[in-house]
Amino acid sequence: MTMPRRLRPVLTSAGCCLLTLAAAQVALADPNKITIGVLEEVPGVYLNEPSHYAVRAVFQQTEQGWQTLPNFCDAEACLTAITSSYPKRLEWTISYQGRALGTLWARTPANFAFYAHIGQQDVEDPARVPTLGPPSVDYSGYQETPLRRPLLATAGATRLGPARTDWRARTPASADLPRVWPMFRHLAPLIDGCRLDAKGEYIPSKGRPPHRDEIELASSWVNNNGDAILRARVRPAILANCEMPDHPSEYWFFKDAKGSLRPLPGQGSDTSTEKAEIDSRARLVMPLDFVDLQGDGQDAVLFLLSGEDAGGYALYFDNFRKVERFTWLYH
Image 1 (cartoon, rainbow, N blue to C red):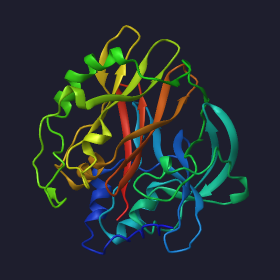
Image 2 (image 1 turned 30 degrees about the vertical axis):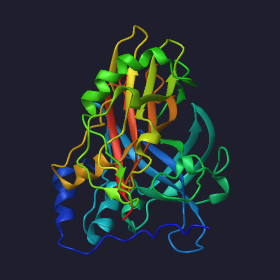
Image 3 (image 1 turned 120 degrees about the horizontal axis):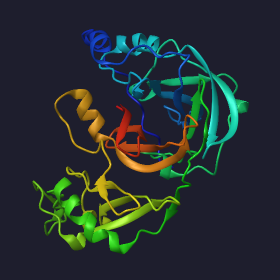
Image 4 (image 1 turned 45 degrees about the vertical axis):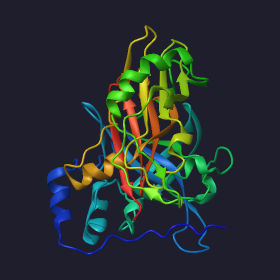
């Protein structure tokens, strides 16, 4: 049995995080507005420590749409200070595809002990936690422990309902690949070389251009209007010898019913700041839920994010033209 990775607490350093919170992150969470969270199974931090459940508050309604709640800390003092940016206590409705599975109360702790716990509220009555399906590594992200499916949680004056257009997983259409390829090549001008020498040692490489026959459509979701989201990637066999790839190897695209194609926003790389670099490391993994959050006929999609030492969630709205991302580091 593989021992779960131990989460390292944030190192004590200068109190820069308090300035970051005041200057760079969003305003305090308003308990009277719609708040979006995710019910998570949280693996134990230490050897043989059992998992538990928490609701991570991630996004909140604004007049402009949605905004990400504060999620960046770089000093130990911040892990206490940042809790004031979250509602102290919320009653959450847990749902899947717009269907309520149950309600529960959760409370923000006095401090978040680890990077990866930012935003997590403690569930007051674990016996009320609904679950869906068996544990799976599909939901583990960077961690190795099989976990139950993360579920959408909403609080506030929401009129939650099923997605208007009924999204379903479908086998990708091979005819879409020739149209995806030029966009993919533009987004990923280099992929990892991943060559081994005669001794089986990895040969350092700055990357190489991808070839068309190395790209595949791995999955797709289609609604009853004919719109689709497509996952394009470098074939896994091409990267089989890569231990820690340096270049992104997959991208997601939106295709409307008329055939217009565009990449989903928020997939670029940005190393301009530490927070931006962390955010870029968490890549799209899979859609977790398609839902109408406000009863206005507009579909929103919650995505799971994962990457090297990083995790998170993305909320797509406004016909996939806008996105908010909540990310964290594990160590």
